[in-house]
Structures are given as structure tokens and as C-alpha cells.
Image 1 (cartoon, rainbow, N blue to C red):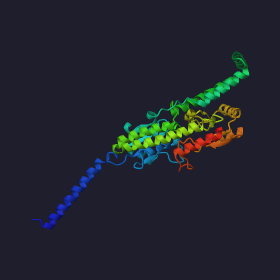
Image 2: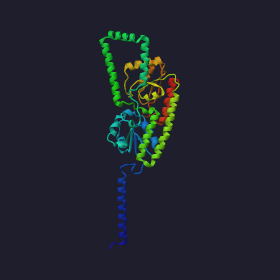
Image 3: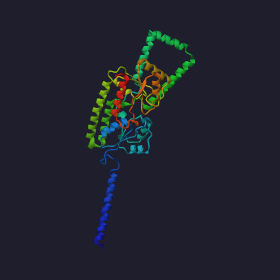
Image 4: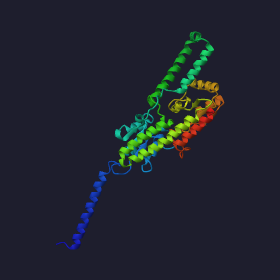
Length: 363
């Protein structure tokens, strides 16, 4: 018959084994989802404006991973091992389809319920809607009519010019037009039919905040009210920013703005006409015809400033400014943080942009 000491040791071993087994079972049950385990959901955002909104709505209790680190150009993002793992482990991924090809590819394999796409919750403007281009075309047309006199006379003069043009020149013009059209089509293909730079409209950022709050509330019902309150507080701040832009740009001497690339179209709601040097992509190269038109526009309209940006080369903006004798300034697209702005936030960067626009346009 086992001694009391032997029986005690056996009982202790059985209790320890049972406790360990229970711990393993509980750990296995909780490994499928961070939210199911009662902890805060793991959240990933693909670039800065999305990360900023998500962090503000999520609050201090939820960590948000931004895939695009300060100094990185969001369009050129390539995912590393850690970033890919973060996407796979995330309970929620906030993205904007068409803005970052590498992220688009990565989220294709994720459950749709874990992905919040900006396109589905924010009303984006058409990519072809360029207020500045329309304004410039109207001015150019008015100048043509003034010089030609009557419309019929202008048409006849134009026909005479075409008749005297050499076949080689005509072919060259057509080839240039085809190249320009091809560039536009390629740019539109990269971004779809919509302008992705919605964050320059603070009210659209507020719409994204509401959508993030709803999604986080589904993942963490116990904190749903907190998420809603955070989104409501953020909407108030964004509405105030929207009012600051509307009032701050209401009495400007000029409304034309020459920018480095077509990232500021949403500012048209404040009465501005944007003339981009490059297209929707900051890496796009403008044609000589575009540069010549911008040079004429700067001289004719008395534009004082050509805007460059931080995450892309300022060479094109600086060259255009030098050719026309005007100054340069920075208008931040806020697509991502630079090393210089890593300690700033969206609201501060938007306010700095407003001040730069007011300086340039005599507001």
C-alpha cells in the first residue's frame, strides 16, 4: 500500500497535469481572434491619413500599425515580412483600393469582413474633374476669341493655319497628343476613375471616422460607445478645420494654384483652381506643352508661387519657378509623413497648408 507521502506526490502531479492541460485548451480557444479573447483588436492602416483617423477613433486602448513609415512614399510601398505578418494577424485593415498596389495584392487573400476600404465609405470625386484645367481652358478660349474677333473668323484662320502646316509638323503634333493621352490613360488606370486624395476635404475624413468607429464597435462591442464618442469628437474638430479653410480662402486676390502633382483636387470646394505640373502620380513627367502652358499662365495671372512637396523631388517645381521668376513654397499632400514632419499630425499639416495658400494667393 502506497505511503501517505507517495499518495500526496501522486495527487500533486495529477493536479499540475490537469492545470496545464486546461491552460493549453484555454490558450487554443483564444488564439483565433484577439477581439474574441477580450483584448483590443489588432488594427492596421495602409498609409498616414487612414492611420491618423483610425488612431483617433480607436483611442489609447488600441494599437494601430501604419504600414507606411515616415519618410516613405506611400505609392512606392513594398511590404516586408513584418508588414505582411501584421496584415495577416490583423482584425481590421483600413485601406484605399488603387492607391498602393502592394497593399491591394496583400489584402486580396484576407476575409472581406476584416477589410475597410475607403472607396466603400467615402464619396470620392472623379479623377477627371480638374477644376484648374477647366479654368485655364476657359481663359485660353476667351483669349483666342478676343484676338480672332468673331468666331467664324477664328475658325477660318485656324483652317488656314492647318492648310499651311507641313505634314511633318502635323504628324508630330498628333504624336504628341497621342503620348499625352496615353499618359492620362495610364494615370487613370493606376488610380481608377476616382481621385484618391480625399483627406484634403476634412468632412470626408469625418465620414471615414464614422465608418471606422462602426467597424471597431463590431469587433469590440464593449467599447463601441467609446469609439462612437471618439468619432463624434473628431468630426467636431474636422468641421472646424473645414470652416477655417472656407473662411480663410474666401477673400483671396487670386484663386489659381500651381502644384507639384494632382493631389489637391478636393481643395476646389473652397473656390481654388488647381493647376498640377504632373498627374495623379508624383512620378509622372509633364510634357513640354504642359510646362509652356503653365509658364504662360503664371505670367498672365500674376501667380506668385509654385508649390513643391516633401516626399517627392522638388526639381520640376523649382525649374518652373526659376523660369518664370516666382518663388517656391511647400504644399504638403499629406499622403505620408516626412522625416521633417514625423512629429506633426494631420490637423497641424492642414493648417500649415492653409497658411501657405493664403500667402501665395493674397488672402
